Length: 304
Image (cartoon, rainbow, N blue to C red; front, top):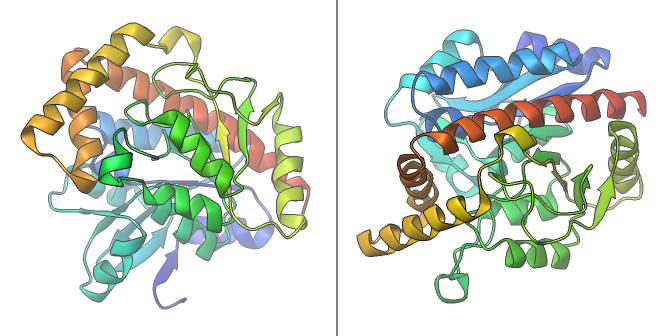
């Protein structure tokens, strides 16, 4: 496995010396935001992680090499290069065999984080069960990964373009704890509440870290979902954003958008409808997740 994985010197030193490390994905840079906001956001998130006392490890694939910890130059490359593949679990062997570039989704970031020995991962929102999945069977590989891979994922909930109720049902079936950080209601990405409850409300990073530690100490496989609501001042109006999502879903259906192209299409169309407000909200929720995720990583490291 070592022949495929390259850990940056900073991340390697942190792991060896017992410093907390926080994994970050690269799809948000290459596919989730336009330039230059994508690069600015990536750099700011890494800065926030460092301010909280942890070491950032942005994860991506360059020329077939799985990388845990990207340099400034590599972050710039991901923010501007064309043709970078969106890499989930099924894509990894194709990308490594052909020595291609890949931006990691939640699923593949979890896989590479586990390979590197990183336990905490901060993202925007997880994938899930798509609306209409009873006909399309469109269910994100993120959910299966959460059931099997020992990484704690801090997010602003599931993307509100999804069927959040069915997403939570799937996670329950797979035995994945869904935790609300300071909230009983599972957040819905752009909004603080989805109308669905998290399994448990956890008030602070220390308690959350103990829960994460105990899950794995008990020999229970798989990850955890930690729903951290978008800050109130950056939340979008629920009625407005839900109407925008309905319009975007209708447009995707009319244009025959399928598979891994669905989420980028919907997010782009929603950004257009909301005149950029959804992008601003996306950036702010990622910053907030980085603060909370780093605090949890710091507390988790103390329990080793």
